[in-house]
Length: 400
Ligand code: CTP
Image (cartoon, rainbow, N blue to C red; front, side):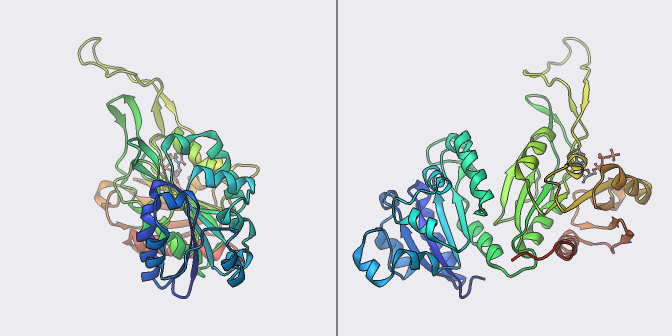
C-alpha cells in the first residue's frame, strides 16, 4: 500500500508517457497522493489537463511560473514528496540527471530534492544499449537512484528489445517496496534464477529442467521485505516478479556479465541452475544430419559465477548464498560444495526425479552455514523463499 505517501511524478517526453495516466490511477487507488510535473517534451505526448484530472491536483510545468513560486517555490516542491518518480525516464533526462543539469523545472527539482528518486527508463533499444546511457545508468545507481525496468518487448518505434517502460503495476510494486519500512530497506540484493541455454547451433541448445520458480519466489520475498532486487534470469518458464529490475540472459557467460554489472550488492542469492559446460565452438549454421556421420561436440567448462563472486577481493557481497542441487549424498556433497565455492550459506536440495522438486511447487532444503546443517520441513517454494528472506534480513545490518 502507498497510503499516506506523496509521490512527485516527473513525466518525461517519450511515447511511454501515455502509461503515466494509468500509473497515476494505480498509485491513487493504493492511497498515494500524486503531484505531477511535466517536462516541455512530455506535453507533446500527454496534456496537462488529462494528467491534472487524473491526479486531482495542479500540474507543474514551468520553472519561472511566478504564481507557482508565490504559492510554492520549486525547492519546497522538491521536498514535499516521499519519493520522486521519473517516468518515463528518457535517455536525455537520464543524461541530464547524471550530469547535474538544472535547466527546467523537472531537472531543477531533481537537483534540489533530498528525497529518494526512482526512475523508470523508456527509450529505443539502441539508445538503451548505447554506451553513454550505460555510463549514465551506472552513475545514477552509484548516486543511490532506484531503477525499475525497462522491460524487453515490442516497442512503439517498431523495434524489439529492452527499452519498454515497466508496466504501471510493476512500478507501483517497486514504489511499495522502496517505501516500505521492511527490514531490507536500503539494501540492494541480487538473485540469479532459471536455467541457462548453451547453444549447439542456431536452433539447438543444451539446457536443464529448472523452471526458475524458486528464484522468482526468493526475489519476490526479498522485495516484500523492502530490498531493491536485481533479478538475473536465464530462459525460465516461471513469471518474473513485478516491481524489480529484471535482466534476461541466455548463456552462463551472459549471466556472469550481468552479475558482475549488478555489483555492488549487500547480498547475492545464486539460485540459477547454470549449465556447467558449453559447446566450445557452437556452429553458426544448422548442423545437418547424415553429412559427416554423427556430430561430435567438444565442451568447455563455464565460469563458476558463485565461486567467482565469493572470492572477489573487493565488491564481495556481505552475504553470499548458493544452492546445491544433488541427487545423492545431499548433505556431504553440499557441505563440500560450500567449502569449495567459498560462499556463506548453501541451501541444499535433493533434485532426484522421485522428489518432484525440480519444476514442482514445493522444496525440501537444508540450510548449511558455518554453524552446521539445519533441515527445513518440506514446504512450498514461496514459504522457503519467505524464510530465506527473513534469515537474510536477520544477517544483514539494517540500513537507514
Ligand atoms: N553455479 C554458478 N555457476 C556455475 C555453476 C553453478 O554460479 N557455472 C552456482 C549455482 O547457482 C548454485 C551453486 O553454484 O548456487 C551450485 O550449483 P550446482 O549445479 O549444484 O553445482 P555445480 O557447481 O554444478 O557442482 P556439481 O557439478 O559438482 O554438482
